[in-house]
Image (cartoon, rainbow, N blue to C red; front, side):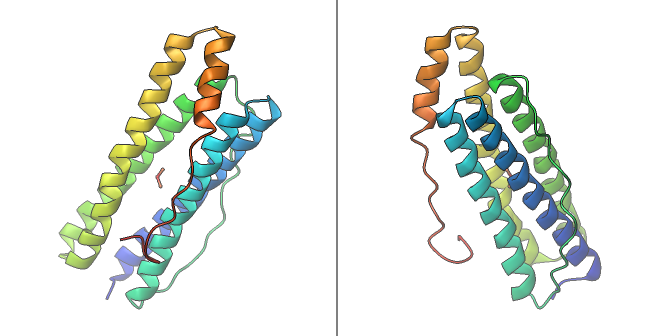
Length: 172
Ligand code: FEO
């Protein structure tokens, strides 16, 4: 059973995950537009991951007998200055999401909602990986600088990323 406050907060997080998906889809589209198909693939996989995050929350609210309430999804940016710009914005956004997840955990603890607290732990761990991936790619892009060959090599590497769907409907 979810309190109304917890339900509202989870619906808010569901919306943020949908926005994340939309943002990375926009980055994938832009990467394709500028001819970086590997970057486009990486962001497309990220889009799929974010949709999975959103659906985990969707399923959880339903499983707890709560009500999913969908809200408008904000329009993402459509233009970016460079691959570095996209990854800096990605990291900045993921830090915002981490903060939001931590606030949800704080609320679950304050409400003694143990089930939601346990549910959220998966997201706490996931955020460590998300931020770490972004930092790695930013470090690589710094090393590459203006070296076109280096950028094409990284593009080839990012082309290999694949989305692995969770083993169960809830991904646990
Ligand atoms: Fe769903 Fe990238 O956090």
